[in-house]
Length: 70
Figure (cartoon, helix red, strand yellow):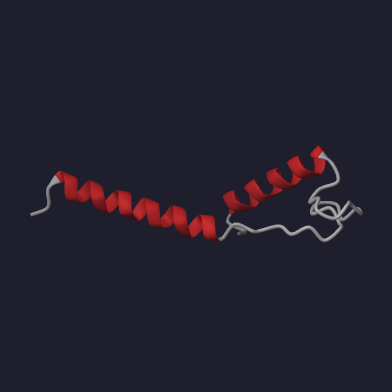
C-alpha cells in the first residue's frame, strides 16, 4: 500500500514532467530584421519595434496558450 509520501512524489513528478513539456513547446523568436508582431523593419538583433508590440505579442501568446491554440 502506498503511503502519503509516495502519492505526493507521483503528483510532483507529473507536475514537473508537464512543466518541462510546456516549456519545450514555447516558440523561440529569431531576429530577422522585422518586428515579430507587426512586421515593421527593425535593426538586426531586435525582435520588436517598440514596447507596445512586445507587450501585445506577449498578450497574444498568453491568450493562445489559454484557449489551447499552442
